[in-house]
Amino acid sequence: MLTGDDKRSKAMSFQIDINCDMGESFGNYMLGQDAEILNYVSSANIACGFHAGDPLVMAKTVQMAVEKGVAVGAHPSYPDLQGFGRRRMDMTPDEIEAMIIYQIGALDGFVRANGARMTHVKAHGMLYNVAAVEPPVAQAYARAVARYNPELAFVCLATSPMFIEEGQKAGLRVVREAFADRAYNPDGSLVSRRLPGSMITDPGKSVEQVIRLVTQGEIVAHDGTLLKLQADTVCVHGDGPNALAIARTLKERLQQAGIKVAVPVQGQPV
Image 1 (tube, rainbow, N blue to C red):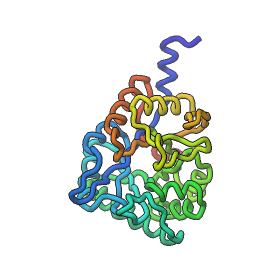
Image 2: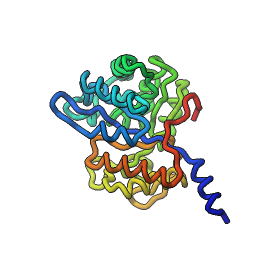
Image 3: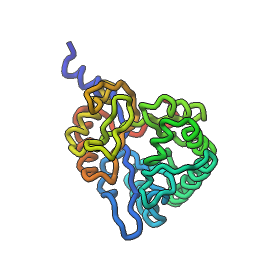
């Protein structure tokens, strides 16, 4: 039987990164509570202007993240500003590769201007979802990251072995991602945003999902199916209606449970 000290020691061996998609305001249109959320996350995925964000928003979001010691990554997408990057676009692998490099470079300029170093890249929306199931798109994404900077971490869906493999084949350090605020299908894909219940808006349920993932290596799909998976980072969507409450509650409860909130170890292959 484990003593109280044994249980605390075991819990302290667990670690997870909390990331957030942010910098998604545009001009006079404000979205999310980035300044507040940055107090509760360890990594920020910042929009690069193709689905959201603009130069001023990018500059301000990067500056805030750097000042708060939050790891900064690029969040490239399809060039779909009106659809917020959530519509599929018919693009060749070469086009996808080029547009990702373009967006990484744009954000990296602001990171360098703040005396910091970009740590990772995470595709946004439909680009991420398509890359999780179609090898040519995953390969184009991985090539873009590797060509720009092979030291950048490659963030991909933890439930897609193909996605993970393509990042590894490109020589990148793979960071497997799960979601704190999304419901899962039995096959490991995310429930479509068009369906009710696709977003988890209750901070308590979000915390329950993440703690189960970290400590037991499993997530419960919407139909009760148990999905076994390992993840290095969990995402909170900055545009979600309860994003701030989820991020705050998640960090507080993880720390109370003795689970360390920190970015994945740099240079450590996954």
